[in-house]
View 1: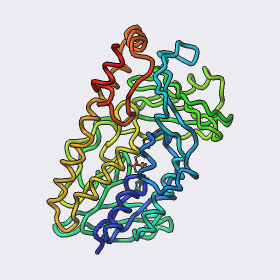
View 2: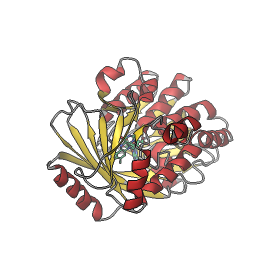
View 3: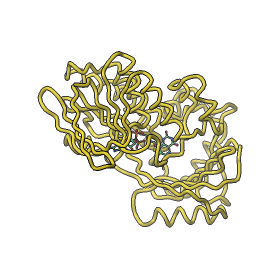
View 4: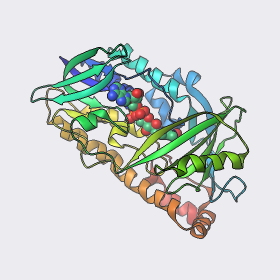
Length: 360
Ligand SMILES: Cc1cc2nc3c(=O)[nH]c(=O)nc-3n(C[C@H](O)[C@H](O)[C@H](O)COP(=O)(O)OP(=O)(O)OC[C@H]3O[C@@H](n4cnc5c(N)ncnc54)[C@H](O)[C@@H]3O)c2cc1C
């Protein structure tokens, strides 16, 4: 019997697998398809990302550096309100490559990585968890472990199987790419989508990404078409995904715990979840003992201690996306300019130093 079966080889799944295998636990990491595919993410992250990777990873994964954002209440021709730092705030990276790199690292540390294994059932028993997975040839595999980590994304099968509550909200995000190189250091954010936004991200030699997220509905594709028409581009490689917002009250049972999008460990004001999910994975690795189910309480408490305030403040920032346009304009005009904010920590926006800078 394994110590841990981890379902899903996205960033938190592979990060937790790496940490648990390094600590000497027996770990199986199941991934339903090819690691990293299909793409459904911008890969726009704070520079903290490199702390989770070997030193040479940046050579393969880095695409562009960003030092600020231009906010628009309307489309590309509307007034731009710049928010920036004099230094780099974030990096745009190859997201497929990131997942592959993290999964390879977990396997090298001793995790048994099995791709093309789709988990279809999780049966939690008093002393073990029985996991059933299928492979593309139709065969079924049954595995047992002391604990299971559900790292299988926003629509988590693990979460459903053990009866944990879904996130409060699921947004629908779409992305597409045009090929002209753009090494600009500003992203454009358009407050033109209900309760969220549309964006343009320069990805260096990898081209330009256009995206939009909003509550699900027929409007999303239409608003996305309006965005690309306004930019006068016809981007290709369109893809889409779900952004979960609002963690449920519990992400643990007796022997199962959720990490990443399955637990809605995301930033409500950007939808970003790569860094939060790996932060939570490290907390899980340092708190959970597979022979002691009660240790899951420590994980539940500590990840919330680390992230719940940031998530709550992130929700407050997101509310501004729904203010009436004239109010948004006044607010953006009052606040734009140089900022001292960390993109993963909304609390830095409300810090004394930042408020002094804004109102001086
Ligand atoms: C349009 C869009 C843009 C985004 N942009 C950013 C961004 O710029 N920066 C950022 O930080 N975040 C961004 N995110 C969010 C980010 O993608 C997620 O927060 C992050 O991927 C969370 O990782 P995860 O492993 O929890 O989930 P996922 O990345 O969804 O990974 C889940 C993994 O589990 C596997 N899986 C699912 N079901 C099963 C099963 N039954 N059996 C086995 N394996 C299974 C999947 O194949 C996948 O590999 C974006 C999301 C969207 C939708």
